[in-house]
Image 1 (cartoon, helix red, strand yellow):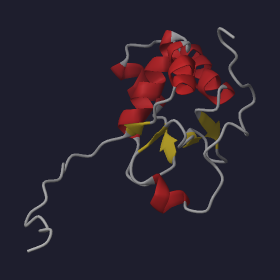
Image 2: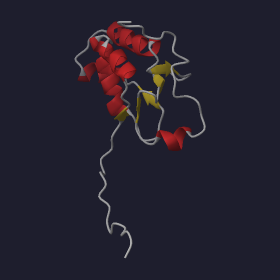
Image 3: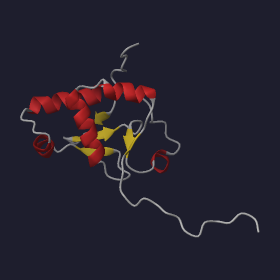
Image 4: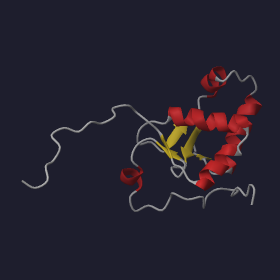
Length: 130
């Protein structure tokens, strides 16, 4: 007899972005400004499977969130950069995402044997409520 293997496996076929939870991540996200938190969530919906970069389409973002000021968007982007959620690439409007916070796909397949899941490149490490 022995153990039997399942004859079928049920899998969720939907596409999803994972937000990695920890007390530190929760505190950082909860202490972002409203606009930066909204941009973080918008980015989560924009990520393509297996990609560690995102194009922030300012026109669409501003339209979807009813934002009229480009300064507001720039401030939100700068806040996410400052705390290490995203970082600039050489391509205008395209940003690296920090897979320590969120990722669409398998981080193991993408980053095996790479030490990049850290805050070491962040310009500022948040120190809220310490």
